[in-house]
Length: 204
Image (cartoon, rainbow, N blue to C red):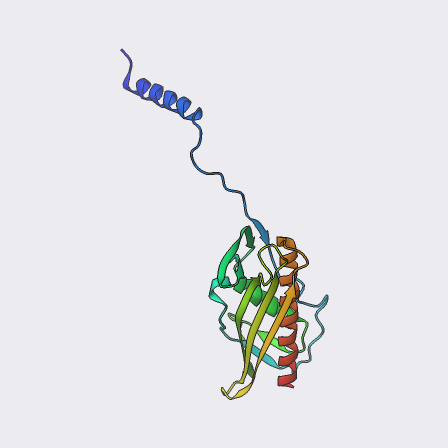
């Protein structure tokens, strides 16, 4: 007579052996390649700031919704799509905020980012209205990366200082993901650099 526990173990062993010979019906997915932009937005070394450096608080801005996550948005005419098997290492809105923060690290203006403590004389709002890859000459031609930002600067008493639009249009050298990412790096660096320069000029 086979004991119940021994019978149970025998059944489990038979099932395990049967499953080991099965072919998986789950689709195999190619792992996405990860990229980042804005890593070179800061200078090599941070200059010493005077004790009286102007402090600017970075308020909550908006980011183009379709491009705010980790996918790379493309536009071909009126058709939107995402680049397959390619992702940013983090949501694009977070990477952009990091690029802004790094750029201000090399500025005489002291930026107070969200979550940081400190008193500021000004508040800066940055809205990223366009952040996409545009195929303006067909799907096979090298695309153009377009980054457009609206910046608004106010004083602590809520009075307005000024508003400005900044845009960078950088053609990719080729219709490859690596070339497109390089164009994003250039476009973000250009726009962020203009925001920093405009903020410095507006607060001094």
